[in-house]
Image (cartoon, rainbow, N blue to C red; front, side, top):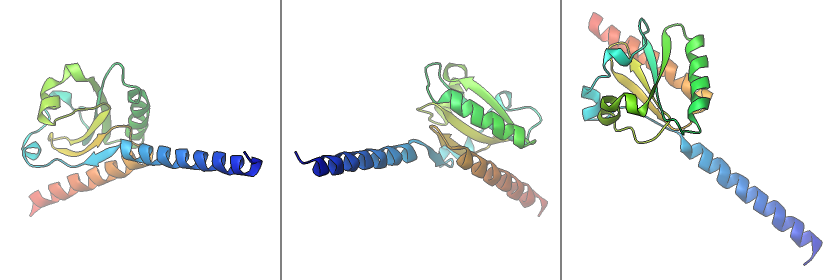
Amino acid sequence: MDTTLSIVLIVGLVALASAVGLIWRATRSRVSTPSGSERAVRVPSRYLAAGKTLTLLQVSAPLCSYCGAMRGILGSASTRESNAGHVEYDVSEIPEVIESFTIRRTPTTLLVSASGDVLFTLQGPTPPGVVSDHIQRAFAEIQRRSDDYLI
């Protein structure tokens, strides 16, 4: 085989593998808002961060390879935001939340208002920028809802 053809083939395979990896990585995390019956269900207050406007409720599993990374991302985010608290539970500790919000993978993070309303669900490993963006959106939604009561 010609050396030039070999180099082109290797470079092409590396580029293809990189593109597939980036696409796979981008699709690993998913952000959603509660729908239908999930909107009516609230997270019990015993699972929320006391005295905080927003709780970053992380659902983890002992063998979850991404849970530790999410713990760090969410911990940093809650440190930056004084009105946000991060709590983490093992999937076996909160079966009622798992069932109510149909959590099927770890890590899953629920962004929950102080009243127990789930504003966003972050499924899978979520980049820090996406986490920060949705925390800001959650605070905006909490503010909007509180403004609705003033009318």
